[in-house]
Picture 1 (cartoon, helix red, strand yellow):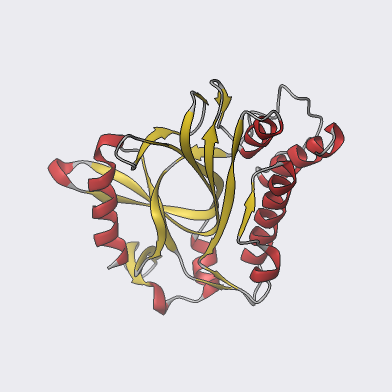
Picture 2 (cartoon, rainbow, N blue to C red):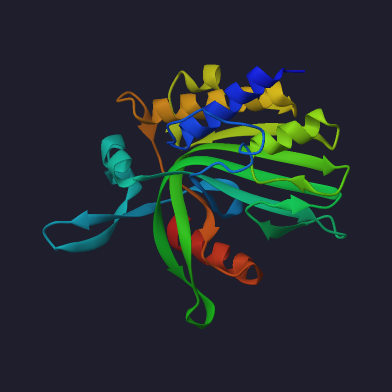
Length: 250
């Protein structure tokens, strides 16, 4: 078990990844890491075939084939850097129901998805002129499959989840997926899976930091993926994801 100093070090790494500048933390503050937003994730990120770019000749946005763009072109397009979070609960049918981007939960089986992503947004329309935002980017997806043993466990971030695991309130495992980034160093920087504990959470932040460094390297090849959708009611998520897949992936 890691001591309090090491736990604070992990929290500092989370703040660095979220573009904060201070590591003067205490236990009450690690639950709230800035630079996070909600996403309804695609089950598996999928490579997109087109992405919007600005055409100076036409003086407007146009859709460009991803294969026609260099990695530098793609890098300049993926201007947002954020941690995208989704919390889902397993229901009686064995499927998962979307709950939001965090908060305290009761006992049960949950899946929390963290996308440490560089991304851009493209609007997608579907039935009855409804619309959603498709998140398109590259990065690292960390999936936490969790069994919550006691009520009131906070799932708003990896830090509170790890601390709950230390208190035997939750158990589970982490899995890791790098998408849209091709570099020989990826395999050295990112594990495949790990049992949930504070040590594995520290390694998670190290992996996320490494992937973000690789994103900026000239020898890294980039290919944008559809990560999921946002700004849509959860009851319309399936239709919105289907529309985003048809528009952007196929």
